[in-house]
Length: 152
Image (cartoon, rainbow, N blue to C red):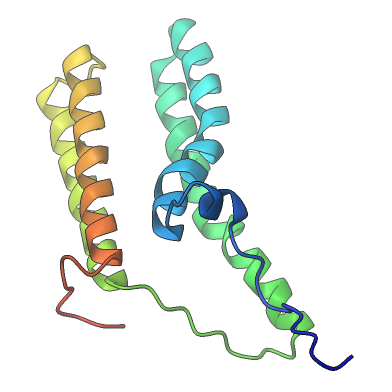
């Protein structure tokens, strides 16, 4: 088969390419929202039954599960199938994004404490604002608008 340029790599995000959306925006918004919708639905159902602690614990617990099992397990399977070949992960501003996540976590705890550990419209609005700030800064790091001083 001369002249055949077959793509044996990762399939490009065709939906994002169709609408001219970058991979960073797809990962941080559309895909993240798609994986969080089930958590949102279950949290709303439980919160309406008066079990707010369970709703918050569910959302936090599912993210912890995703990070400790959902990410490592596919990587482990990939490594087993590929003779433990190393895979280079590159992301502009990865270190700064991790630091940003910890800063956001501190702001979340402070904002919840300042609202006397009660869910309110003000707290919800502040959470949306925090997410928007995180999203904007993360995209700016990925697009090299803001340069992270530490490279990983």
